[in-house]
Length: 346
Ligand code: ADE
Ligand code: ZN
Image (tube, rainbow, N blue to C red):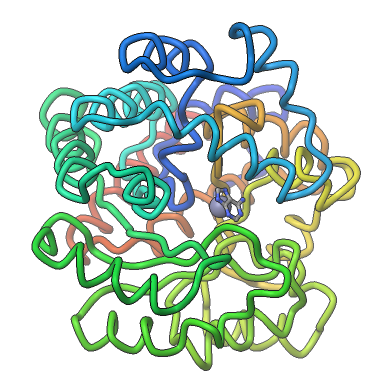
């Protein structure tokens, strides 16, 4: 492919048009304020904010925890199976508009079961949206059940146990919520159990936590992808290992700016990760809270980082297919679609 033949002015159009996979999206983080208030009214849930504008105005975060406090409050409006389905369908419509052809969605069951919502309602609602996304929008998807790392491993084990009657509806487990002070080692047994059950494994590591958390996520939890992972750049030996083993990193540019992981996009580590040969991908994390969905993330990163051009756009999309948990034939089909779009621009 002659990437040099693609004019820089056409990059935004190319970024929007190219097919891509989203591998790091917390579905509860796609709840837009309008839907939060609609569900709050319908379900009779009281919110600490008078309206949509006041809630949006509170989205000025200083770190991960300041975001998580508002994120969990927003999720409190989800009570019924249909609420989970409506939330995920709203996400899938936006994803399809951004030419996302595959989405692997995180969900946090403990955020809901702690409020008395049945596991069945959470998983059935999301699974039904996944089926509709394929049927109505042509978007392939899967669910990844995340454990909240600020809670205990016993609670994580109980959550996995409670979800097993719905095993057919999720493909893996993840680890999210407050990272600092909650190292991967805390969840060694539950991840071993997930592996024994044939589930995929991913974990947030190296977002706010140190590079050592990335190493222990790989060695102790046996994860197949690292979510965020940008702090690996502080440890050159770890960067070499991630490149050699082609461990995918699901990087979230707008999230990193909103949560002050980087002070500004111009200093983001994404170009360094790609230059080091890592399988880095671009994702939206919590798009309703961080200022945009997939294409907004691509556009913001490419606008601020002149090192990123057509070759990097292609690498990021290809990496997203390589890192996804689809089978080889689906991966090949997505890559063919990518090549067709690039051929139109070259
Ligand atoms: N839960 C939702 N978004 C998260 C993030 N960026 N890091 C950790 N936990 C999360
Ligand atoms: Zn995340």
